[in-house]
Length: 218
Image (cartoon, rainbow, N blue to C red; front, side):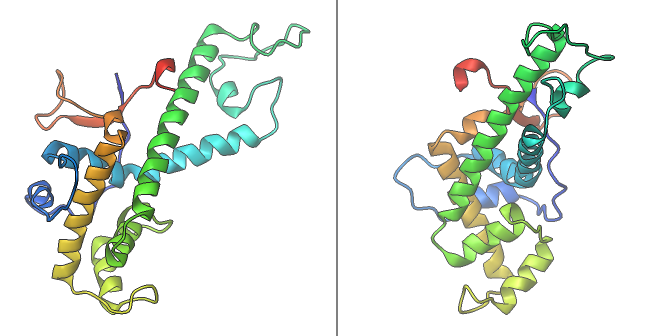
């Protein structure tokens, strides 16, 4: 079973993008990511802000005062009023569906946190300053730049880099850094959490999502 998350609509989807990224110049000590791995990595990069938002939302709610031992996420899963039975036990009196939802929600949170931290760690360790900034602008930075705006930003240059780059160089560096990140995420196991479902009812390209964790994965 997979958890499908809608990635933010990408405003730059050139023809043969995956194939071009796959052919990008890469220097690796391990087996390079193939086109499917790069597709997973690109989906993960495009989904980063969405998944990070879910992590931040979950952590915010957990920090809020609880009512009868329940936070807002728990209360949302209860049908009708939940009445305590005069006991300090915060678990035994909860409906079974709430307990299941609570456990599943926490497993999803652990998965989302794990993959977002892995993506951010890989992004922060990019050596080339132009490539690192491209990833910040397009994928993991607080503000999302449209492709053409990111190109213009990089063309003018910025304080962290001494010179600007033109659109063709930007496109080449984008492909190269995505290929490099795909290799990193493949090697550290992060792409193991991303799956492409080609099952019945899916389109021919398959549906990409994060597989559901179980307690053995934690």
